[in-house]
Image (cartoon, rainbow, N blue to C red; front, side):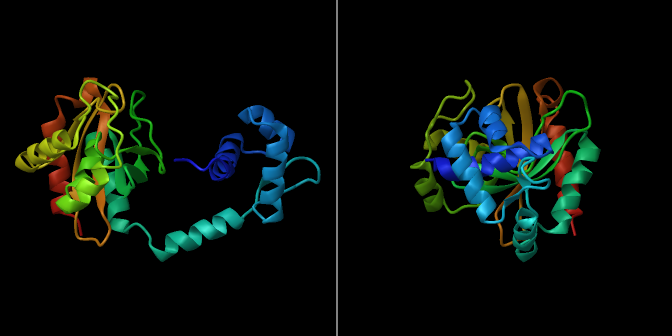
Length: 241
């Protein structure tokens, strides 16, 4: 369930991240397709709380540094370990594919760090993107680290939507994928959620946080390379300090 007011406030921040210049409330309403009255109220609220300001006086609003100050404080309190940031970039260089570090977020896996492939045809991803925890190798590498009863509670919250013919459609199907991964030594995916993508993922252990790493790219390059990609990830994890 999405709380629309909260989602709209965050969408305004994403809007400015794309626009990169001030905008009036009227421009925001038009660009996002929102009603003017509610947009003006939301912009006014964010401005009164110090999250938006007018850099040139009636020339439009722009996000204030308050966002950055709060984000930096939160990040400093529980940063992603430097070794995992380094791992993502090292794996991207070694494989040529996009690499993401994921963490659980309810029924999703959320990318907390991404090293995007430099190749013209690649998986475009950014920190904050989410994928279904059951319908992605990144997500199942997180599920595998949870006790079975915790997974069972989570399954009851999942809408088992058929994103593709390869999507696991029941708790038993997900558990079968976890057993398969345990036997192979890695989790794999093939267009289960995002069309034309295949990848491999593994849990990141040695931390109090549940994390996984996934290497993912186009099916044309990665489907047959999955054992090779898994071997590369295994070698880098063995040398992780």
